[in-house]
Length: 289
View 1 (cartoon, rainbow, N blue to C red):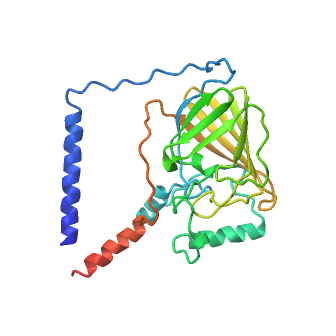
View 2 (cartoon, rainbow, N blue to C red):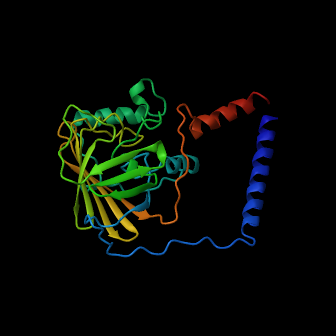
View 3 (cartoon, rainbow, N blue to C red):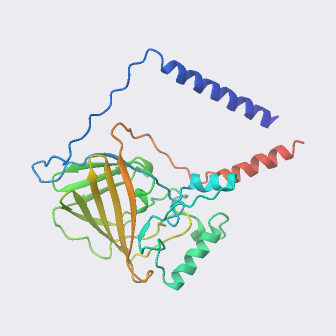
């Protein structure tokens, strides 16, 4: 009975959505689009190239870096049985693998083996617990916005209500004893590339769902490479000799979203993933037979 009601509810919802889409296209003026941005960008009085606006990864995903895979795509692979051979987000080393020290690789493999059925708190991805994903993970999947003011660049996210204020006036980093979820970023402009050195990372957030990580000794040099008015490459080189055998770099292509709007975001710890919810529905319907 519950399954029948669920099917009826879904069917009515689809019908209402289809009707509203159909009606919305009748007699409605076309939504005005933002005109193309000039390139090279204009230079305000403080000398910063004007790159403000909203950006989003071209092909994002926070399930894993190697291969680059979103949680939705990973779930689709399980359902369909078709494995996607996505390239790695890691561009250096050239093999696409994170150069872990042996002990660190073993720890990451343990997190990978337990992320779905955690037996200890450290097995649970911090993002799943609604904690800040941190840097560089926040550049893998959500929309973010650049704001610029004299002496600083501000980056905002709709998800997690996160933000960064990056001074570009040459001030030093905060004291080494201060550890922050977003780290302490200090920036400079190299032509149309924003270079940010990020230190003071608390390193409690993972790099992805499957457990890639670094320590609080890490330094990240980020490069926001603005290729043209609508294209940007985000690059992050992570140096952490306590975890890795060498520095390594990931790259996430981004595109400008000129007409995109931020939406209200809420994260609720304890949400059920699709697999758990599906099993509960199956068990519920099996008990009614």
